[in-house]
Amino acid sequence: MEKIKRKATIKHKVSKGKITTVKQSEKEKKLLRLMAKIHVECYTMDTEFKTAWFFPGYNGIKGYLGTEKLIFAGINPSYGKFPSKPVKLLYDSLKKYELQNVHITDIIKSRLSKQQYLRLKSNEELFNKILEKNIKWLKQELKIIDGNLDVRIVGIGNEAKEILERYFKGKVVDIFLPHYAWVESYSESSRHQKRLRFRSAIRNIKKAFVIDLNLKS
View 1 (cartoon, rainbow, N blue to C red):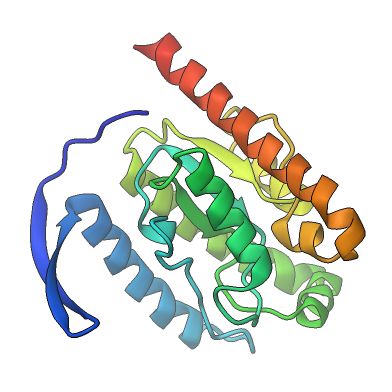
View 2 (cartoon, helix red, strand yellow):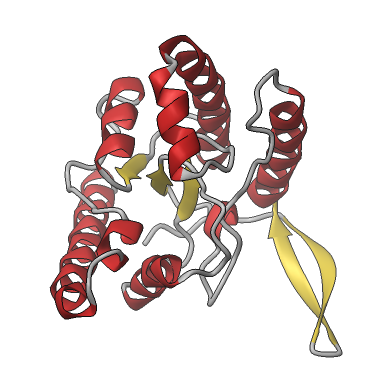
């Protein structure tokens, strides 16, 4: 995987009564500033969808603060509790294949229930307005990770992949990754095969990304 040189600042956090130091790169600081900006702009937008959400770090996975040039992007965050069983599948699978520093994000930053999302999509004018605003934020995100937008993006689920291909031609990984919520929505008897399919897709995505890096080096 690509090694990124970092200018680090130090911040402190308290964990189980112990103070530990956490190095924070320039890219991570910029991502945090962008996160704060999105929270404010999302809240002040003239819509009912005012609560933004970002993938946190968990179990060694950096989430939104990942700075690798491999991006995993879903369609939008839901109101589910973190970490849900489906999200654990995503994080555990990334850890299994040593993809701790990938950048995990959503195209639309606002938290939406399934019903809210369907209602929003039924209003084409409003949906396109919100989508364009969020694509602008996503481009800013990706520019922080690589100023030349030399990134590879994985769409999590069909709809995310279709939208990403519309706005980021030539940068979307041509390997289908089913949405982790879809995998976990089936009966226990059928989940095993779907989890294997999900993990296999992530393994193949990593292989393709590493090959791409080697071709450029």
